[in-house]
Image (cartoon, rainbow, N blue to C red; front, side):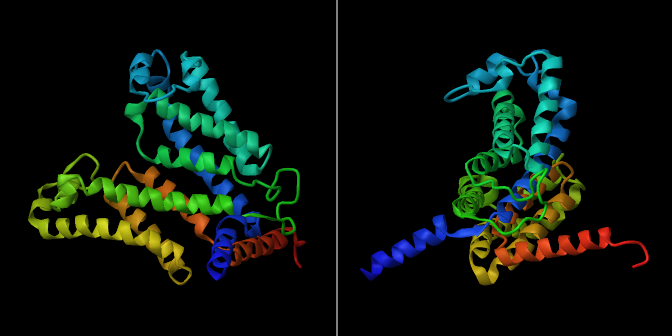
Length: 303
C-alpha cells in the first residue's frame, strides 16, 4: 500500500501537478524567437533548398523519407510559393510568441520545421531536430492565456498540469544521452581525436597546425565533452544542482560558439531548452522584474 501511494505521488508530481501557466508562456515565447531566428538564417537559401528550381531534387528527398513524406514543400514547389510560405511561417512564429491563436500557430510552426527537414534532408543541421521536437511538445502542452496578445501581459496566476514541462525536460535528457550513445560508436570520439579534427576543419574559428602540438589538450576536451554531456542533464533534474547545470550548460555552448564559426544556431537552440528547468520561484522573479520595468515605464516624468 505504501509503495502504491508513493508511486501515485511521483506520477502526480511528474504529470498532473499544477503549475503557473506563465512557465509554458515563457517557453513558448523563447522557442518562437529561436525558431524565427532559424527561419531568418534559412531565408537566403530557401529557393536552393526547398523549391524545384533549387539544388535538391524532390525525388531525392522522397527517397530519403523512411515513412511518410508529409511536407508542405511537396505542394509548395515554385520559388515564389516557397517565399510566401516562409513569410506565412514567420507570421505563425510571431503569433505563437504573442499568444494569438497559439494552438493553431504552434501547429503551423511544427509543420514548417517538419517540412523543411523532409524536403532537404541533406541540409538538416541538427538544431532543427530539436526545434521539431519542442514544436510538437508545445503543440500538445497547455498553452493557456498567459502573455496573450489583447489580454493582460502579466495576468493573475492560472494553474495548468505540468506534463508538458516534464516531457520537454525528458526530451533534453534524451538529446544529450542519445548524442553520447552515438559517439561511443565513433572511432574519433573514442580515441580522443575528434576535437583535433574539428579544430582543423572548416568549422573551426582558428584552424591551423597548432592543434597537432596540443594533442593532449584535444584528447582531454574530447573525452571531457563525453563525460560532461552524460552528467550534465542529471544536474538539471536535481533541485540543488539545477542552477549549476543551467550555468554550466550555457558556458559549454558559448564555448562552442567561440571555438566554431557556423554552429551558433545549434548552441542558441540548446540554451533555449534550459528554460523548461526553471521553477515557479524563478518565473515569479522574472515576472516581478518585468512588472517593475513596466511600472517605471508608466511613471510620469519627474516623479
